[in-house]
Structure formats: structure tokens, C-alpha cells
Length: 243
Image 1 (cartoon, helix red, strand yellow):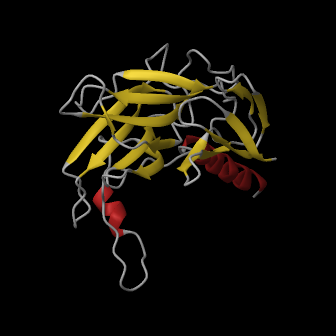
Image 2: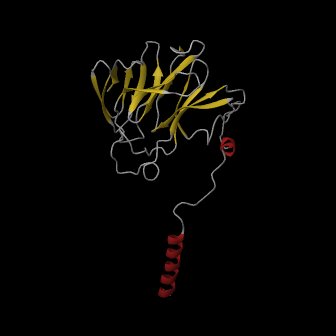
Image 3: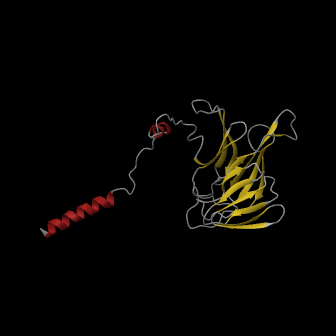
């Protein structure tokens, strides 16, 4: 009886060891996932964008023209190893030294069915972009009939100003405004950019990171873990709001 029980345990152990740690299942399609939401009476959920047009969405913002701006990442929370990325024990994105593949994408002409008429990758080659805020359309200095588009977004390790100067919908100028920001923990970095009526852009600084940054006025600010701060869109000044 004792040997029978022992043999049974061995069989069970072998079966458990052979079983995969994660059961492989086919992912739901975006439409299948949409149908799985439980909504209150009278509410409707629409599919606006999905892979391959966007990866893992991070932050959203609307501009004055009603366009939806989305920051998204391919392998969040793993950054591509590159300039300004702090050393870490966890792995980096991709194998070897791949280029950064994250984006800021603009969805235009969203209709009653939730579908945009155009999807434009405004800024590419980014490294876990999170916070984003589009700025007002401004007359282009080089094109009289067109207008340039500008947005400010965080991509490791800086808050950067992206500008489309020729009106093709793609940024062709990048200007780091503030940085480098700490990115040891990529779950909590610089995010939630909010333009306010006082002319400032307000933002959150993620937990487990320490950042010492300054504006063009050379006034340094050190943020430790979770805080809020605000900055000028021209890169002139940045200051802490909460501790």
C-alpha cells in the first residue's frame, strides 16, 4: 500500500512538472474584447484603435481641432537600452540593441462609430513615451499657406518638444526642454501633462525615481518619488508643486 501511494505521487509530480506554467491561449481580437465589457444601461463602448495602429496606450489628449493624441509603447515596461536610460537588473526591450519603436500617434476625424478617418504617427523612434500635450496650431515661419503643429511629450529621458514644420503631419524637429528624468522604474515616470488656464503645463513625477532638472533659467529642481510639478512650454522654467 505504501509503495502504491508513493508511485501515485511520482506520477502526479511528473504530470505537474510537464504542465506549462502558463497555458497557451489565443488572444481575443479587439472586437471580441469589446464585447466582453459590462456597461450600465444606456452606455455604449466603441473600438477606436487597436494593433497594429497602436501598441500599449499610455496617455491620451485632445487638441483644439478634436484630434486624439496617444502615446504608446511596444514593450512597456521594458525600455530600449540607449542614451539616458539608467542601468537596471531587469531586461531591456528586444534582443541585442534594437532601435526605439514607440510613438506619438494622432487620430483624426473620429466619427459617430468611433472610427478615425486617419491615423498618423506624428513622432516615432521614442522610448516609452508617456505624458503628452498638443499645443495650439501656430502659423509656420516658412509656409504662408500652412500651419505648423507642435506637441510636448515625455520620452526617456527628457520632456521634448516635437514640431511639424512642413505640414505633412509628421514631426521633423525635436527639442529637449527638461531632463534627464529618472527612469529606474519605468512604471512611474513623467506623465499626465495638463495645460491650464494659467499658462503652465502640470505633470506628475512617478514613484521610485529621482530627477534633478532645470529650465533655461538654470533654476534646479529635484523630485524624489511621487510628486507633481509644472513647467513652461518654451523650456524657460520648471518648478515643483507638491512634495
